[in-house]
Image (cartoon, rainbow, N blue to C red; front, side, top):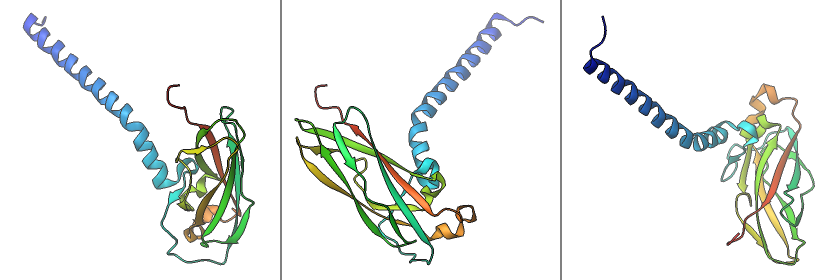
Length: 183
């Protein structure tokens, strides 16, 4: 039995409404994806995302961990960055290390850094108390600055049997130029 024109029009309107609702949902999901992924990484330590802390209240355990430091610099940033030497200490001890950055150009240059830790599964247990990451740093021509990082490895890492063989964590920063005004 064929559909009447009026019924066909209602059905088409309903399909169009469903399609419009689906498109609106997908646009909303696209906007929400980045903050939700960021939240997921911060909560779970996914992709080597570290945790943020105000200090270690859990104490220190007998197991030692070596933390190594690494820096990578985007070609557009005329800086040299020297990471700190590795630190070996008991898990839970709060440490402060320093990265040294030097602007090798003849003009002021602003840069910023992103970070991660490896093995990625240790991100959940690596806590930063103070860090220069995600803060724009402007270095004048020839200027050298020290950029401290204060951190600790959460003693709860000892409860994660999958991480028993881990004795080294690498904290790596990648430095990027920040586009200047008018460019």
